[in-house]
Length: 252
Length: 65
Image (cartoon, rainbow over all chains, first blue to last red; front, top):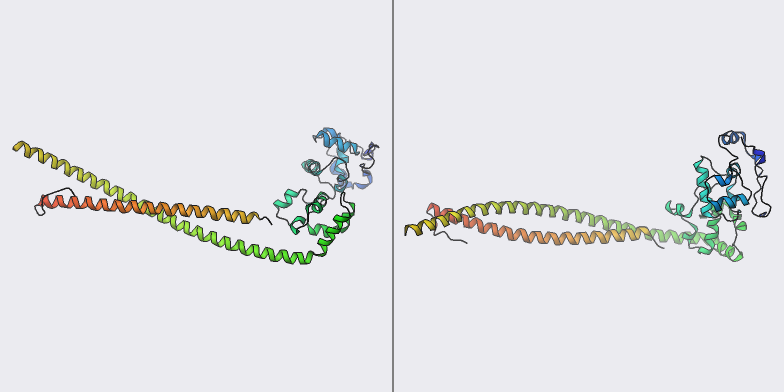
């Protein structure tokens, strides 16, 4: 089976900045070791079924086997050149398919998922996208996450002093902004409530009209049947009348 | 801020209004048709009554109404 102590020995020296320091052997606890031995950890990264570019980027960063991939820290992925949000998602999907998770893995990994969950994102506070996007890339989507990691801003790429200043202003004015947001939300909710009430009224009206329509249709059917019977009787009478007229003509 | 719920409600309301307008129109048509049919039936009934009265020798000459 795989020798854990050899993991990470062939790191590419050309890509020193992107290289991840993997000193696996000491960090994995015994339980994890037992779990991992079920999988072939020595399997080459290029044979895992990941895309060619993705596995190439991982290999260049020193991640050459499945074992090394499983022992990556999620924060390390940020520093691997060529791996963006999609790459991260692919890696996480693959690791999850094996039944494992990566260390420090965020609860939700994508912007879309957050929106689907209905979370209040940074952009919902009116923050410009130029400030939000780098934070999203760093895995900070909500104000709570930002409060939990106040120093994360320092390590984010493309987050210069101007953006920091803007962010600080937003954080300073957050309370008043939240109050305004609450007022807006209350207004929006009351408007929605009114609209919902209006909709309920219309639904009731529609139901009443449908009932009336059904009654009228039944009435029409009854009337048609009645008319048909009358027509039959009248046709019979008219026939008799014609026969009588013919008889009279013959007698004359 | 863009709100999906507002748009959804607006669409629902518009759709309901359209449906209600269509139903009202159809009901008016049906009412009119039923009214005409009732008058027709009434006339035919009268025609039939006159025939029977004549047959019994009570009424006048049978004639089509």
